[in-house]
Every structure is written in structure tokens, then in C-alpha cells.
Image (cartoon, rainbow, N blue to C red):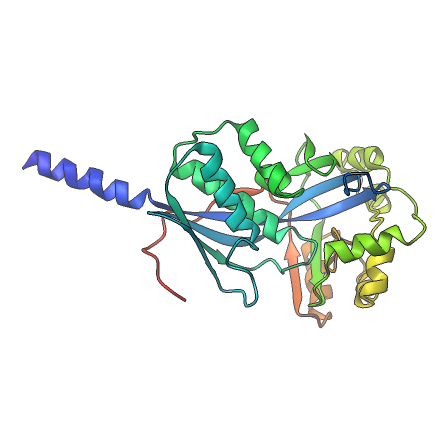
Length: 315
């Protein structure tokens, strides 16, 4: 009888360990410097990146065969066109695992918005599979997979605050941000293609380059006015020409008292740096855009969610 009791516990835990939930945090670019296009088609970048507490919820199940995806976001691909799908495929292949994966993505991060939502989802799949399979891959191996999937995926896997160089995959982890200002994150509901923004950038004279070392120093000292003045995104002129709402949002945030207002990534999301949550809240109430959120720094790129998920059900 005792044997049967313990066997039932083992079987129960085995079933529960076939699925997990991961929070996938967005990122913002405090600065983004871009160099001329290289022969391999990539632009070298220097970016100061920060995780923020806007997140997608990614649920991962082990299944017999195949990779399947479902999501609550209309228009999001559920096949190889989804970076989370490709992350699962790359992980299983690298780990030599002959199983399938089902992925469910509950979106909160806007799509094609410069906030790294797809990359965060891919990182969550990598982290979720590592958790489910008992971490068969080393950290370096996992980061190597992430770098092959997408330039922002390694940062979304580690998160926090970091300097990213090269293709954006060479990371230098920085000390966590001190408590202080909060961000008001605003998206106009316009989808911007990263490729289109970079193509427009290549046709324009390059603007002033950011000083990432100066920005990093200001952030470490919690010198927020100096940090605000050091926030530069070289892709803004290109994105502004494709999406006129971007400069309008920047101007509105500055009128509302933001220390700085900058576009994140290749847009179209803009964030304002406010000295306190109350100021950000009041500003957000006066901005009529599809996505307006107050955000604080997050300490990691992905974190376990609310524990194990129930059996799969269709939306």
C-alpha cells in the first residue's frame, strides 16, 4: 500500500513536470548606436539595454512529437515564422532530445514595437525547456543558440541592464539600476519592420552617436539628468520618417515633464523617463494611444511564472 502511494506521487510529479510557465520581459534601449552595414548584412551596434516589467506569459509543454504554437495575438505566426517555434526547434536539436513541444504565448508586449517581444518569447522557450529537462545545456551553449536565433535573444535570456555590442549578442552585464525614475511606455499601434527602418537609416546621413560609457556611468551614479541627456537612438530619424506618430509621442512626453523621451529599438514604441510614478501616471492618463504602460526595471529577462500550468486547452 505504501509502495502504491509513493508510486502515485512519482507519477503525479512526472505529469506535472511536462509543463512550465515563464514570464518573458520586454526590453528598452536606453541608447542605440549604429555603424555602417557590414559585408555580412548586419550593422554593428552599441546598445545600453534594460529589462522592464512588461511581460508576455509563455507556457511550454513537452509532447510526443512536433512543435505546435497557439497564441491570443491575432496575426502572430504559429509556424516556423514564429521565433519561439524556431527556439524550440534549435533547443531540441542541440540537446539531442527526441520529443515535441507545445508553446502557448499570451501577449502583453506589443508586436513589432522595438520592445523585443518576440525575442523575449524565444528566450522564455529556451529557459522553459532547460527547466523541464534539468538543464542539459551549459549557459554558454544556451546563449549560443540564442545568438543564432536573433540578436536580442541573448539579452532577453539574461536581462537586467547590459551593454550589447557587435550584432547585439556580445553582452557586458552592468550593475542593477538604483531605485528611482520610472518609464512611461507608449506605442501608437503602428507595426514597424526592423528591416524597413534600417533600410531607411542606410539612406540617411548618420546622426550624432551616443556615448554608452558616459550613459553607463550616469546610470551607475543614479545621476538621472545626466543619464537622460545621454539617451540617444540613432534609428529615430529613419523611424520618424516612416511613422510620424513617433516624434509626436516624444514631444508629448517631454511636455508632460519627462526627463527624456526616446524611441526603443527600431520603434515604434517610445518611453519617457519620469522622476516618480505619480508623474508618469498623470502623464499616461492624458495620452490617448493604444498602449500606455508604466514600467519599472526588471532584474532578469525571464523568470518562472506562477508555477505549473493546467492541461492544455484551446482558446
